[in-house]
Image (tube, rainbow, N blue to C red; front, side, top):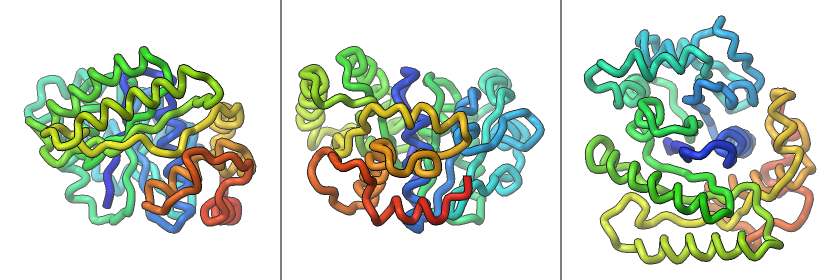
Length: 287
């Protein structure tokens, strides 16, 4: 199983969009996928059609009350499950403050979960608090969604520093696998310069004793697409809402890349998403 934390301490960069739509694409490819919503804003839960009204068990119950993950988890689509969030999760930061080993509560809960998945994607909030530390302690990999802006690169250094600290003290297996550029406009010189600068930085890290030594910039860039902004309000992934959009094409291509299947070229220029994933999504999606 690949446990992937999707993190960035900056909001609005595409963390939830990437987590949900990548999960939907992987599930449609036949992989068993579980999404963990570790953001008290519960955007991933809403995106997947689960209303965070506090009436159903959430990750708060797992972290604070030791409720088994099987009692919290909900199936939201074929091959796709969710451990939801709600506003109560915001209190977990305070309630866990005095608990010894609070950073590894999630990892220990998942270790005794008998359910097997191929992928576990953790949507983290825009902070580096206890909830994000729990995700990093439980994860094997980190994906970093990034906007192609220079200020985003400045914030990236702090994020990498945090992953290095967690790897040294809590989770030696943690590694940064890749960076996903979101809200991408390849026609601008700035976007191309930021991508090149990041690739140059990562190349200089090869062979170093840091979690991002083997990180890559994913070839797939998620282009600006209004459909990606619209689909959460309908409780659907991009594949259930607009399967012929460029947003669907990009996330299907990203899923192929994550699965290790080569994609044609660094950018997907066609409107229709790759047949291998999108056709299955259109047939199986129920939201």
